[in-house]
Length: 178
Image 1 (cartoon, rainbow, N blue to C red):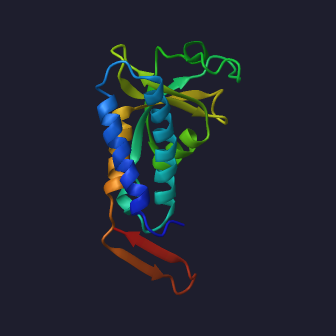
Image 2: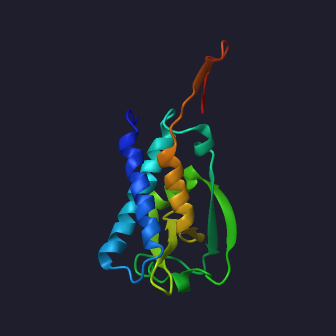
């Protein structure tokens, strides 16, 4: 349970700012690539922790759907070949899907494959990822602008109204966070 959310939200905003800079930079260094990986993992873990804590983000943020591209698997993925995305997945065609935050956070946090996508100009354009459960089914890609928008939304989301009610018969509590 997160008691004070500012320590989780402020770093998300810094990460979003860093990604905004990296998406227009040229020739990312090894240190920058390592920072991207840390930021993605820590950022998505932070997002998941915040959405799982009932009063730290609004229901609107919690219900967000994120756009990803999905690529079909072509052959079994192992530790020995997981870096060969072009031979493991059909990168020539993809389907766009909207997925909930929880799904995306889980796939990033438990990724079997994680790879930043660098444009021909050398800038950050997104991330490829898939979990150990899904590696032989599909690979996902999220545009860096989608990551930036998510981190900004969660980082800036400060609920101002919390309504709680309890069903007198079942005892089930309902919480509305706005």
